[in-house]
Structures are given as C-alpha cells and as structure tokens.
Length: 272
Ligand code: ATP
Ligand code: MG
View 1 (cartoon, protein in one colour):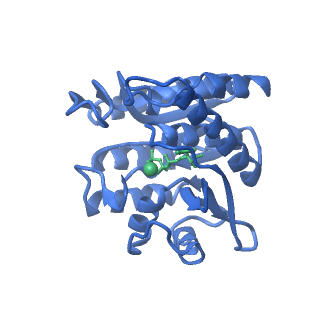
View 2: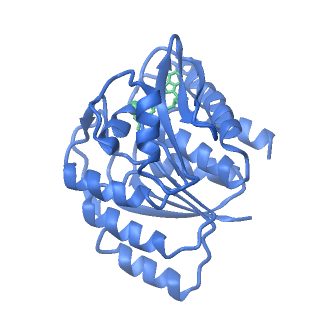
C-alpha cells in the first residue's frame, strides 16, 4: 500500500472535496493522509455563508510532526487551498518531499471568474505550486487564469494547452477537465507528440457539486497506481459519468449535496 497525501478543505456538510477524496482513495487501496487546509460548516455552494476556520497556523506544526515521525508520503493530491500563506506553506513542504506523483487541481475559479476572496497574488502563488506538479487539472477558467489568456468557454486547445505546459516542469502534463465537445463533456490534454487529445462522455443534464474534486481524486488514484495518463483520464470520465447518472437517478430533493458515490465506489472496488 502506498500513502497518498490529500490536501484540501474539509466541509462538514455537502460531501465534496476531502469528504469525497477519502472514500475514493481508500477504495483504491491507498493509505490516505488527509490534511484539511480549512474547516467549513458546509461547502460554499447553496448553503449561504459557511463558518470557516483557516488552518494556516496549524499547518507548520503538522508538517514538523510528520518530519519528526519520518512519515513517508508516496503521492500527493492538492485541491482547494484558499489563501496565499496556505499555498506557500504547502509548496514549501512538497518541494522537500521525494514524491513519485504530485497532482494539483489548481482551484482558482469557474465560469470565467476567480472564486470569491482570490486575487492575482493567489494566482501567482498557484503558479509557483504547479511548477512542482506532475499533472495539473485546471478547468477552462483556471487554464485561462494560469496562462493569462482571455477566458473563453470553448478555448483554442491548440493554443492554451501548450501555454499551460510551459508553466510546468519537463515531462509534466496539463489536463483541462471541463471541455465540451458537441454533446460530450470530458478532458483535453497533449500527447507526447504535442497533439491535442480529448476523451469525453455524454453530458447529462444539470450541474452537480463535487464533480471536479471527485474527478481529481480518481485521476490521482489511477496515476498513482501506474495507469498511463490517457487510460486514467478515460476511466475517470467513465466513472464520473456513472456517478452523475446515479445522482440524477436518486431524484434528490436537496441539490446541494455532492454527487452520489455509491456506483463509483462499486466500480472502483470491482477492479481492486
Ligand atoms: P470544478 O468546477 O469543481 O473545479 P471542473 O470545472 O474542473 O470542476 P466539472 O465541470 O465539474 O470540472 O467536470 C469534471 C468532470 O465531471 C467532467 O470531466 C465529467 O467527467 C464530469 N461531469 C461534470 N458534469 C457532468 C455532467 N453534467 N454530465 C456528465 N458528466 C459530468
Ligand atoms: Mg467547473
């Protein structure tokens, strides 16, 4: 078993981010080191303003203890961080770890806008963090913010993917996670020849919380097991499609709760 460090917020209610990554990666046979960067009473979509505790003061003590305990971390997945100090602390710590995989979901914004509370300084801190990554998973908005290119709902992938790659170390991969092609939604990336690749699944009606977080956890888990990038993205999109379909089939009365994980976890366990 290998140890996957997951660094992102923990929302008590709403079933996304760390609450979704933990079961997914546990089902994939990882020992998960779950590091919340902030605690929220709920996630930020639909419940009003949550009570938030920023854990930036706590993080250095955490890292210090792990160093003393000689904890060995094999892979890491970084999601929502939330402040420049948190981003810098995580970057400094990870730069010292001999990881065999670092996946960063550079959570900055959506629908062409930065999330509330973020500014250019935060974008710059994220640019520093992704220099250490093996794979980054921006959505279209984040791809625009990281490259400084204007936001377009359907960007020219032959321009934006190479611009993203330039921000990364050699051999690392940028994957845009919410690309729409015709009736499909999925991921776009460059293959070893620099050619744009896309893998999608039919887009189902509606918008659901936690799709991006869960997709990132599945991709990190598969890559950490040595699955190659194209195969990992294909399988991750198929599994996310299952999860969204299950969420729709549940005919939920509360649309705020993150996507259903039951079918996804069954699919994961059927191959583990
Ligand atoms: P976030 O907004 O959380 O950062 P994201 O913008 O990176 O996430 P999403 O739009 O949430 O990405 O999509 C992530 C993945 O979830 C897609 O690649 C797809 O596999 C799946 N997905 C999302 N929405 C749908 C949908 N309506 N129907 C089918 N699959 C979906
Ligand atoms: Mg999105």
